[in-house]
Structure formats: structure tokens, C-alpha cells
Image (cartoon, rainbow, N blue to C red; front, side, top):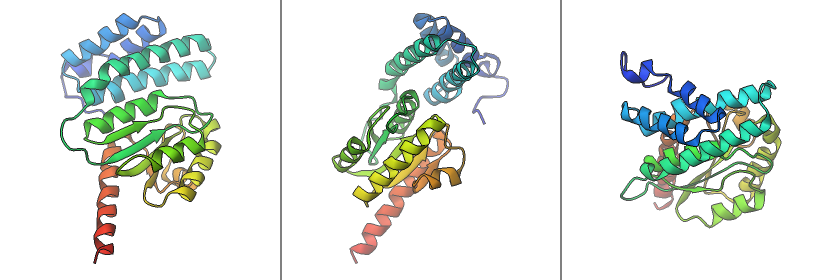
Amino acid sequence: MSPQHEGGSRRRAPWAERLEARLLAGDARGAWGVVEAALAAGAELEEICLDVLAPAMAAIGGRWERGELDVSMEHRATGIAMRLIGRLGPRFVRRGRTRGAVVLGAPAGERHALPVAMVSDLLRQHGWEVSDLGADVPDEPFVHAVRNTPDVIAVGVSVTTDAGLASAARAFAALRAATSHVALVAGGRAVTSLEAGLALGADRVALDARRFADLLESVRAEQDALRGSAGH
């Protein structure tokens, strides 16, 4: 459910559709203008990511999959979207002590970095330190990043396409063999159910980006409780 206010300007303005049009036109300046207009109308940063940018890119990806767009247009739109995320990123940074660290990435062969970047920013806004590995991460670097990230409590593997499911399963297997103190979280458009995520080898499944921070809070609480019981 979108957290739009009844009767508010955000409900009337089709921001996602406007952004989609600018992205397809290759109009980076116009795309940023749509983002600025949505922010001026009262949209929160989280809404820009999840209710404007994400659906715009999903619509473009769907049109490419149906053969309605050339791949060059999809790649150009993705490039502009990444630049939008880059400009918005500093606004998500939250001052003060972090809640803990999280490692995020897409497995080998999965080339969609945009979902990882968006979730990374959303988690930073909630006070988490995020190591964003981006897309197409081989198993060994995934393991290395987790082992060398202080205070890490979880690693998230993002899978956007069905073609990435097998490599995600291999990544989870490598992570489970190498680490025992972190929660393994599956997410992304290709992970369509709790059962599907668990079948990949994950401990937890994040079907909703808005719930990811809550999931991490529960993981941290469980790990704190385990450490407390071990100390007695």
C-alpha cells in the first residue's frame, strides 16, 4: 500500500508515469525535475525510491521483456536512474550511532544493481551501516566482504531475474559454509515467496523493502539475546 495522503497532491500526480516518460526519452534533467517536483509536493525519500523510481523502472523492464523497447533504451534509462539515486543518496544518511552493519549485493551473473542501491539507501536512513557490493558479485568476494565488515549482522542477496536464482543459491551455500554469525537474507523481484527464498538457502526473506529494516531489528535482537545467554 502506498503511503499517500487522501486528496493530497501526491495522490493526483502520476509521478511514476512522468518519470518513466523522462527516462525513456533519455532526459536526465527532466527526470531529476520530476523527482524535485515530487519532493516539493511532500513526497518522502522512501516514497521517491519505492513509489516513483521503482515502479517506473519496473514498467520499463516489463516493456523490454515484452519486446516493446530496444535494450539500449532500457540501459539508458537504468543509467539515468542510477544517477538519480546517486544524487539522492546523501540525503538518506542518518547521523549518530549505527544500529549495525549489513552487506548487500546481487550474485554472480545478476546484473541489476539499482535495487541493491535503493535498498542500501533506505537502510542507511534507518541507521544501518551498509556495504553495497553492487551487481554480479562472485561468491568469494561476497564471503570476503562479510568476514571483513565490522559488526555485520546480516547479508542480503538481491535477485531480480529468474536467471539469477541458481547463482543466488550458490552464494548462500558459500556464505553459510564460511560464516555462522550473520543472518542470510534473500530479496528481489525474483524471490516471490517466503518458501522460494528459504529454498535458496536463506534464513530470512525480505519480500517488501519497507519491511527490511524491521527484519534487521528482529535479527539484531535475536543475536543480542544469544550473546547474552552465552555470557551466563
